[in-house]
Image 1 (cartoon, one colour):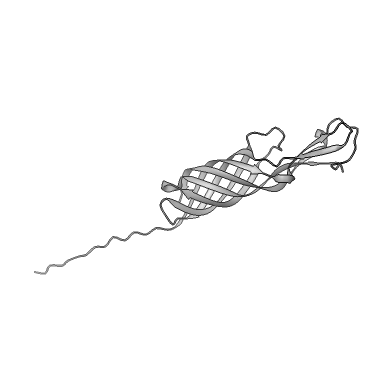
Image 2 (spheres, rainbow, N blue to C red; image 1 turned 135 degrees about the vertical axis):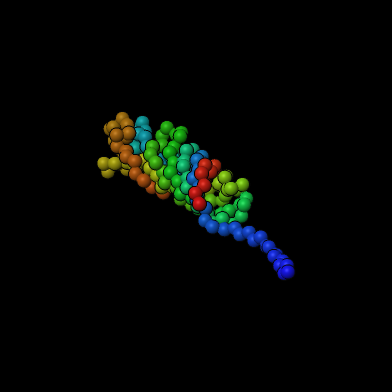
Length: 161
């Protein structure tokens, strides 16, 4: 009678590419590209820079190579809409940049990068410093898309393998 011995080894591997979606709170800043226009008492068109961060509600798609259980580095793509700021141009912002993913199943993500969104610009050949008889420049502005930057924190909702 023959007795055979089997030695079993269990091998574990990690890796692969992960994609998850999340809801985020981001802050966008368009610097000097975003301005509030006004007419001064002497009839001169002026502008104040909106060089402040505007809170946005965002949806993010995070992608990263799976290298660890509790920390990964990857990228993110998202869409955001402003949730405050009366004088800011309204519309959808596009977000793209690197991200860090933390926690079990990388549920928490911290992102930053380039934002592409609407800002106000003067129309009809008007420029800052021109003199006008108009009482308001609201009818002489339009929203155009320009570049800025963003920072955000998101929470993963679904994993896509």
